[in-house]
Amino acid sequence: MQAVDVFLDIDGKSVRALIPREVFEHRLRSGPDPGAWLKSYEENAEVLNTAIRRRFAARPQEMVVVRSSDFDSLGADTSEPEG
Image (cartoon, rainbow, N blue to C red; front, side):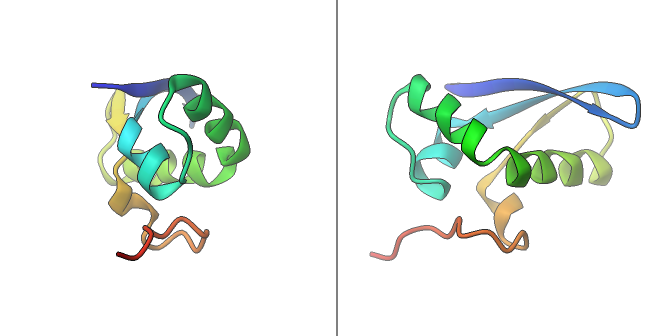
């Protein structure tokens, strides 16, 4: 899986999160290379970290995988392009 691998402290626990390429390219409209994904993570850290925390709250485990559907209720302009 091509993804950005991050660690986030949630309630004193280190949680590993994988954010797949499709989240960056389709939801956040970043470029197709890992450098662009990292830049997009930095630019969208607040919304991505919120998605990670929600995914963890729904099912606490040591690793979570963020999906495009995690952004549906976050209110950020992360909608998929039409067409």
